[in-house]
Image 1 (tube, rainbow, N blue to C red):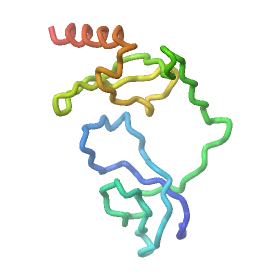
Image 2 (image 1 turned 180 degrees about the vertical axis):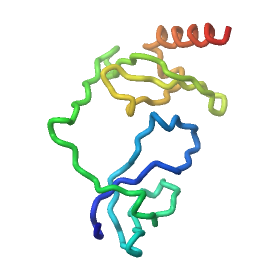
Image 3 (image 1 turned 90 degrees about the vertical axis):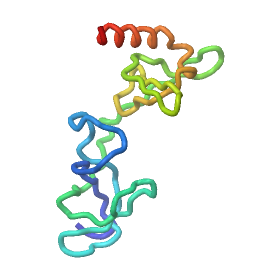
Length: 144
């Protein structure tokens, strides 16, 4: 590998604030440029500013980045109009958490992959009240 090559960084041994299920997260992230070859087995990566990890890594933690094949790209679905506002349709509520007194739900969007699941405030899910109620019923049934 040489400087300015694009690589992906291994997620192995990276620590996150939220507990993630290891078998469900990606094995590699990004497409980062090699900024400098520090030695024959370590490289300095040009990482994003918000990533709080050391930018010098062993070459065993990186793999060469390959662009996806054009036919493999999935077009994201278009939003639907609800009361004159463009919205995506929620398919299922996956989880619930309370952050600083604010209840948030993890929403899986219809026709999207799991990477697009996002935490939404309860008041932002006005048009998905039935999904929220189903989730709460399911959680209450599991507790019993």
